[in-house]
Image (cartoon, rainbow, N blue to C red; front, side, top):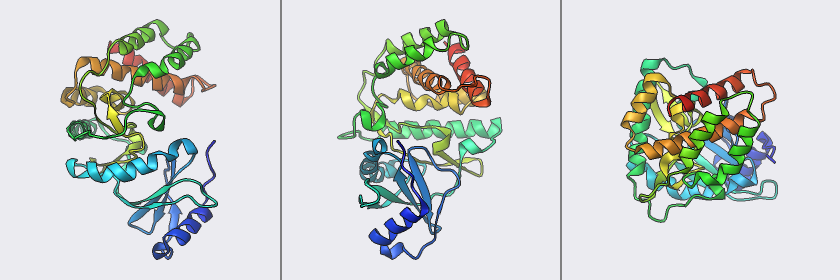
Length: 293
């Protein structure tokens, strides 16, 4: 159950805990995420509050690890400035970050030539992330919905979704993708993962990748989950460029197809109208995943 996080609540939290910033204007951002509600704090900072208890554990992980990762990356990531404490009216930790300029990629129309360049930048980001020392990094678990862990966690959910979509997708082909994804494991040392690398969590400015945000799913483990963006955001030549430049093997890409398939299936199943734009988008993702096997 998500919380109602009002402007009045946020203003009170700032006044109570960070009075040095109480004079600054606060307003909600134009596009806020599901896991967190985000507000401007003046013109140079943002306030980010978990929308439910299941997302709250991510706050301290981000506060600890983002400053450690940042120096090793060519692209900006959120910079924590302060951590708010639970209060009478809001029971979780929350964060204040330095504001990063840019537009979420999921609200932009990007032509193929620029998309290919962004794909190469995303590949660079992942290659750099994977080289950072993972010592003592957080392992996959409930806090990040097992990103970086085994897809086996979602086996029953995936099979249930497939049984409900017999009339809408090629279920047998999808089962083959899923079986192949489950047949291999990441047998190398764990690497850092973002955990939710999606169009909504990358910022674009002047047709360039300017930042990667929302590291709530971060951890160490199998990097396959971060490759899902190849199907959810990239296409055609940009997808090929991304796959060529990310330094990972074919079995990791097979697991990536499994992660992408799972996500598309669980998004498609609850949609009552299987012909609306969102349903057609998910069906297209599934078809493209299947076509690559």
